[in-house]
Amino acid sequence: MEKIQFNLKDYIKFVTEEIDNNIYRPVRGNSYLEVLKALHEYLKPNTYLEIGVAGGGSLALADAERIIGVDPAPNLAENERYKIYPKTSDLFFEEDAPQLFAQQKIDLAFIDGMHLFEFALRDFINIERYSHKEGYIAIHDILPRTFSEASRGRMTVNWTGDVWRLIITLRKYRPDLNIIVLDSAPTGLAVVTNLNPDSNFLRENFEDIFKEIMEVKTMSFLEARDLVMHTFSTQLYLMNLVMKDMS
Ligand SMILES: C[S@@+](CC[C@H](N)C(=O)[O-])C[C@H]1O[C@@H](n2cnc3c(N)ncnc32)[C@H](O)[C@@H]1O
Image (cartoon, rainbow, N blue to C red; front, side, top):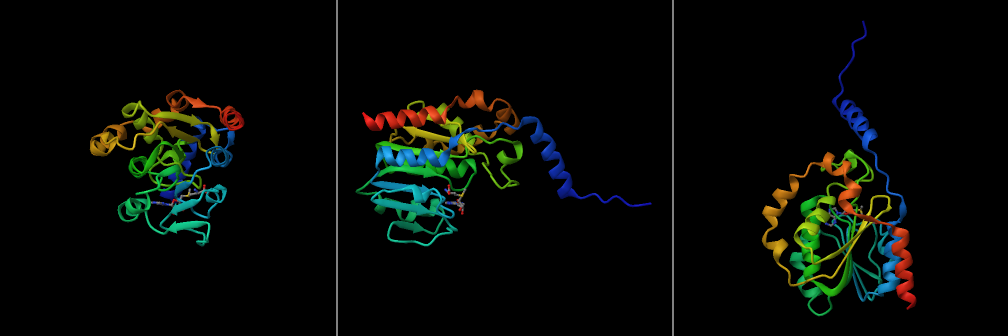
């Protein structure tokens, strides 16, 4: 008789697919790259900071006076347009940011580095500290479509991890911020304004906030994703930006 071999990897894949099939929530708005492009055109930032540049797809949209990218494994060569820091964002904020942003603050930033809640939260805290009050912070990957995509252990090509926890945190503990969650394909984009570089609440309460927000279960979040996130149409947002730019 043929012996059936149990393969843990296949089993996990099978179970994950089964779970995902029941809760697949697509994100159908215009691409996040269109929003970034429009923000560059509308804001015309002097200083643009991108955390997580990979091959430079999103960085290529920037036309700022100072374009700064941070990535421990960048897949693009530095040129006269970009300054790339080949290190983690935590190290960058410790070693380089104080001097880099002492005079000229950040006008526009894009968080797209390590897709785990605590990393994204630290990126947000550090970026806000060095931003103008009128600055913009865009956060990628806040709308996972499946359970496996939202998992803290990477299993998928398009991986959002649990960056969505950052939005829940900001909504709860920073009601002073203006947060728009866009249904930008493929996995959502949040645009945060009304920044307060002097706010220390998140930094000072980091450990307690982390513990509390980690209690939110991924599956329950996914089931209520669109309700929890108050998602806004990317198409309407783009139309508004274009109209503001013309006024
Ligand atoms: C999804 S890719 C970025 C894609 C790019 N922003 C785009 O849209 O074309 C994520 C990148 O984050 C980088 N990364 C991982 N951990 C990081 C960290 N701690 N700090 C900064 N970047 C990190 C990875 O090396 C990877 O290149």
